[in-house]
Length: 231
Image 1 (tube, one colour):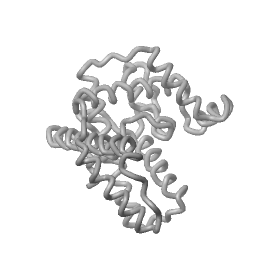
Image 2 (cartoon, rainbow, N blue to C red; image 1 turned 90 degrees about the horizontal axis):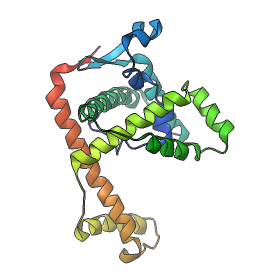
Image 3 (cartoon, rainbow, N blue to C red; image 1 turned 120 degrees about the horizontal axis):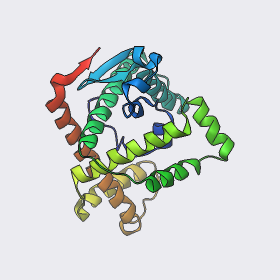
Image 4 (cartoon, one colour; image 1 turned 180 degrees about the vertical axis):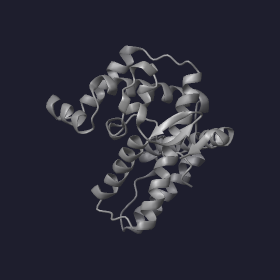
């Protein structure tokens, strides 16, 4: 279950980018540029020789737990253990996809990165709040730019790998029927199909994309299983 990729986990999101450490961008540096601290930092897993650092794992786990806490959900020991396994699997999945994207030699223009960075900044009340978020997550703007670029490369790789996704009206109607049943169970009136069709179509496409990405990741896991080491 937890080896499956979560819904478009690669798609850029504020939490994903600012909640992540910059270990992946460090792979672009030479060994001489790495600090002693980075060299000696403990790893929790390796993927084809690339280390997944403990700090990245702990930060990702902290972000996952914070999401539940914000919703007022208290985790029991079993769920917390499952989350720990899931977070590590997610990091492994991300690294596998990153390596595959890197092998494709995909090029992203700086103007595209700048545009996405501007979009991220726009989600903050002001520049001070944006800088505060960077500070809290111990990420510089340059590191953030590199993280954004990497995510864009991965997204482009996934788009190319899964191809164009379309859905039939029948598939959209299945989702509509689910929506209608849920709405009516809450003693509310459901919108007419034609009114919500466009929105549900996008939902159906997103679901199908998720399925294709899940399958892609599962294939990568099987192909690279011998080179995935949990430390």
